[in-house]
Structure formats: C-alpha cells, structure tokens
Length: 485
Ligand code: ADP
Ligand code: GLC
Image (tube, rainbow, N blue to C red; front, side, top):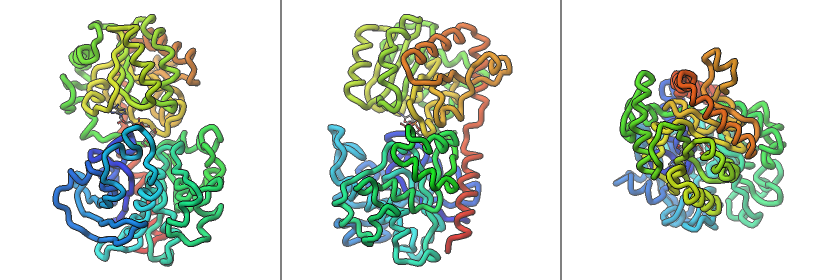
C-alpha cells in the first residue's frame, strides 16, 4: 500500500467553495482501488470542527508559526482525515479565505504556512504510527508543504516525496517580503531557487519549485500554463520544470452526481427516460420565477467572476432572450456583476431568473432540468460543471479552453453525423462568439433527434475517476520508489 497525505484548504462535504473541494473529497475513493491509502489534512474551520464531534488529539504544538495548535484524527466518509485545529487561525466567522466583506484575511500567509508546516511534519514522520510515502499538496494554500519538506533538516531518504497539484494558477498566495522572517525557513530559502517571488514570497511558486512532481487538472491546461496569458507569471518556472509536469483530468464522484440516484432532483431519470427531466425543468421554472414552456432553458452554476467570463455573458442576456431562450442562474462572486444579473431579471421577468448565493441542492436540480449549461470561461483548469452537465443530459455550451476543451466534443456537422458530439464549443470569450453559440444551441435544440443524440452521447461518456485514479496511483508509486517509507 502506498501511503499518501493529501493536503488541501477544502474538501467536500466538510467545506467547499468550488471544484477543489469536489476533487479532494473524491480522491481517496478514486485511488483506493489502485493500492493507495490516502489520508486528508484540512484546517479546522468552524464547519469542520462542528462535523468532528469528539476527536482524538494526535499531536500538540505549543508554537506552530506563533500559535497553539493540535492535530486531530477523524474520518472523511470512510477514509482517514486529519484536522489542523488552530483556533487562532481558523476558528472565525466569515469565508475560508476572506472576511464577510470579501477581503482576504490579513493573516492568510500564517494560516496556510501553518498548514504546510504541519503537512511537512507529518510527511517527515511526526507520528510514529503514520508514515507517508507521498505528500500531495493542492493549490497555493497547501503548496508550502513541499517547500517545508525540501528545507527540512531531515535527509531526503527519511521524508516523503512531494507533489503539488495546480487547480488554478491564478491564485498564487503572494505576500510581502516581510513575512519571510516568520516562516521558520533557513535564510537561503529566500532566493530565486526557493520561496522568493517577484521581490516577495510566493507560496505556489515555492511549492512548484520544490515539489518532486507537478500536476494540473487537464492535459490542455498543462500546456496552456507554459504561455504567459495562462501562466500568470509562473510560465517560466512551469516551462523549466516541464518534464515533471503532467495533466490528469478530474473525475466526478458517482455517489454524489448521478441522475438515477440524485435525491436533490424532483424526478430521477436515466439515459432511457430523458423525458422525465421535464419535471425538474418545471421545478426550476417555479423556483426561478420563469414562465413555463418547452423552449430552451439555459443555466449557469458558477462563481460570478472574470475567470468564468461572467462579465461578457452579462452583455448577451438580451440577445439570449431575443433568440427565444430563458436562463436560470445560480452563482455568487463579484458584486458589480451580480448586480448586472439582477438588473437583467427586471428587464426580462419570466425569462431570466437569478439566485445569488451558494446552494448545493439547487445546483443539482439545475443540471437535472435545464437544457444547456453555459460555461464561457476565459480559462478553466478542468471544470466540473461541464462534467456534471454531460452526465445529466444538460448540454454544455463552453469556451474551448483547459479541461472544457478536453472533455466536450463540439457539435460540428461531422461530429453530429458520427454521433460523437456532446456539446457546443466556441473559440474566444467575446460577446459575438457567445451570441453565435446561443443561436447554434437553440438551432440544435429545435431538432429533437439531434438534441437527444447530444444528450445521450454525453451521458454515455466515462467521467468517473477510474482512469485518473489509476494515473495518480501510478505517479505516487513512481515517486515512492525514490522515497523512504
Ligand atoms: P471552480 O472550482 O473554478 O469554481 P469547477 O467547475 O471546477 O469551477 O467547480 C465548481 C463547483 O462548485 C461545482 O461543484 C459547482 O456545482 C459548484 N458551484 C459553483 N457555484 C455554485 C453555487 N452558487 N451554488 C452551488 N454550487 C456551486
Ligand atoms: C479550480 C479550477 C477548476 C477545476 C477545480 C478542481 O477551481 O478553476 O477548473 O475544475 O479547481 O480541479
């Protein structure tokens, strides 16, 4: 058995702000069939503490980057979970990364350096009865784990190998030079070959420099991040480390996302009973104050941000309605953009319905009842909502980037004729392209047999973790042959 410590700032169902949580929540089960035991380490936010009940204390820190902390033992479903309980860092109301006004917590550097420090300690044999072959750190919040391992006084032979997975290179954990003195790293770590990044400290940069392997969440994004427009300052480092970078596409958890068993749906269905989706469509119409009808119903389930192209889409809502479409949108994010969507509801009552906020249950209903899901992302490392759409017969209409390009087959004439098409892809996130795609989607929708073909082909696809679980396991094995335990 390969022993892996997976470290992340969120994991479904404990805490989730986006796809990262879906992935870290699903990974233990994804790799288990391939001879991997995965233990997950997350911070002890209030929601996590509340879910734990009485947990055993495995280790106490008197001073973990200046605060008291302890490591608690729990379960994530049927898999082992460790919680870094540090009340001074994580017990507070507000978001995981920001306060209730959306401002980043000023001590984020300390919060996530502490997470990395604890991860590196665990991966260096802190607990006598738990040895790890691999430290798998997700995104900037965990990336310092790899750096702390690299600079640990322990010989390489007595510590785990490390992997950093990039779920989104836009979020880098960049801080002022002044924090370096509090990180507890040797002075030489502040260098271009260490944690230094553009005159400050870069957590993701540090992790990417020091990790034994780097992965990201789709093959296309793995290529894209070598270019300045996607690499966001890290393209040089990614290119230098190219031989250690691989793209492994995310899967979806069939226990949570399956239209046949999904209890969040009004009516469950299969590939053979797609007409039953209508009951879910009716429920969406009611819930989003839309006038009922059989015409095309688009949905959006997304962070309302620039990354997701939500600014451009907001400019095309009148066109969507003029073309005969309706829209039910669920999302939260940029306040100015949220206001634009609310304004569209006033302009088009009955045609556009908007729910600002986060609602797991409604996100399932939208996939189970809307006809098409719009995903006009400027970049998308993997994307999960198109995978849920494909699985639920909610046809994705998306930009050809990152994981969207890797998982959707565009309904061009040849692909439709061959029965291979699963969605609609467009090349550039501009108003014109989005408008064209909406028109294309509606034209396809108006050909019922073609539309059914798209839905069914999507539903036949294998978006399970089967293949990707095996790929992670192979990567772990390859690295652990170089590692100690
Ligand atoms: P990202 O992680 O970049 O936001 P993904 O497509 O990988 O994008 O994952 C987004 C996840 O968050 C999906 O599980 C999606 O259903 C969920 N999600 C996004 N916005 C909301 C919302 N407002 N309410 C409920 N779920 C949401
Ligand atoms: C990030 C990316 C998204 C990806 C998710 C899980 O949030 O933006 O594309 O699906 O991580 O890997």
